[in-house]
Image (tube, rainbow, N blue to C red; front, side, top):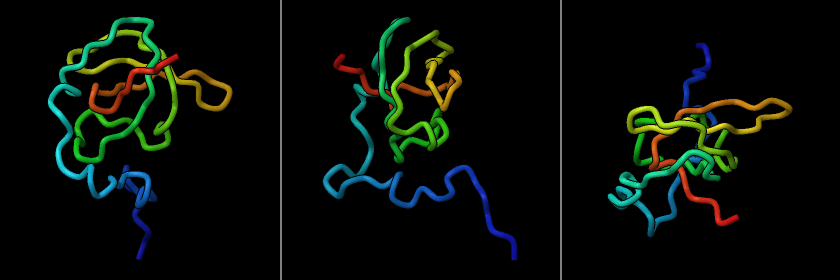
Length: 97
């Protein structure tokens, strides 16, 4: 039988929540607005599947380039290239720097 290589494969520990953090995220996180040029961290929220970027971008820091509907276009450096990913605000955290 062939091995499955789905979107969330090999993310057993990456997409787990701490026991006290389980359940849905606060509503204010979904209503968060960012402006162009803001620095954000990509932190995946496994309780929200919509607008989730690929798990390889978990933990990366990028810059907001534009807004597309409810989602944001984030430019992230991946290896030697810059890539634009689309993510909803539930999967983004504001950078303190």
